[in-house]
Length: 260
Image 1 (cartoon, rainbow, N blue to C red):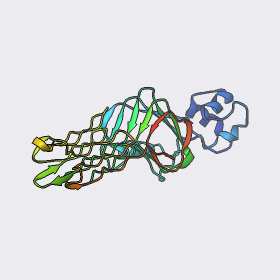
Image 2: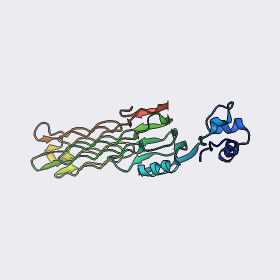
Image 3: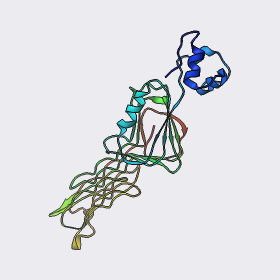
Image 4: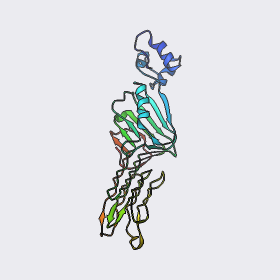
């Protein structure tokens, strides 16, 4: 709730909003210098704290809905555990232009990563692109302090075929699914939180023929390899770390993938 702008009521409203009876303390609570006039506090709000713990299937709308419920109030969002988007088709964290918060501080704790989801490996087809980690539609109102890492999802590995052999690509890191295959000595594997998946391997004397490996975070998936004797598809593109508009970078930290 913002401090009212009605003369004569600003002081009491500031006490109610900030819990501070000294004007200097109330001003700093709403991100103003300690010295200044009471009227400058009108319309300002105390920061709200919001934290998100580890979730490997995170729905971006959860945070969007919370931020919208706060109106113009500034919010500090602290990520305390690894986050992975629920789908490679949507970013893990999204800050659309419809948000009206005066600013949003995104703090990623040390040892914590915000991931786009890995792309799925192809099955006799190209690998899917990795997902983006963060989309920023509010420009410099998003302030990022990255004490951990921000990582685009790895692209899925490319599939292919040679005769009856159908190759599946490995899943991108993290959690991209491996592509389906047939007549293989081993099938494609999914990506994990820490590594991309491997492509399928041809059976018998064709063991040198493989589906493409999934991409690690911020990297494209590999191409299927039939040594030129079959149909080979490329891996999917790497997901991006931060897309949209450039934020205010308080601390860039470790970043895997393209960013603004």
